[in-house]
Length: 102
Image (cartoon, rainbow, N blue to C red; front, side):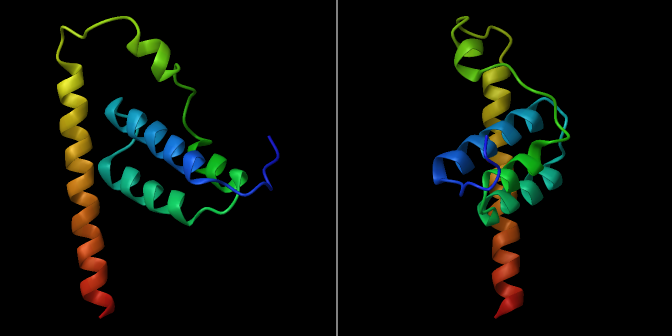
């Protein structure tokens, strides 16, 4: 991977999804996720994106993990709730930022 190549929106979406999976696994707090997700959208190169996940272990491919069938433990619902909480927190932070800068 050439770290100087410019990042695409697909690259950014992939990194945000990876950060979300680490958050649901308990490796990142919601604040850390929010900070890193904001940095993802400011990143210009693949190297900038790689730096945001450098301290996190590799995760199994989500397509492979989801092909094992249903989840009887309810973890899918828990992931959805965490995603909703992260989205709500991000909107609150964005609203506060807009209010302060006006």
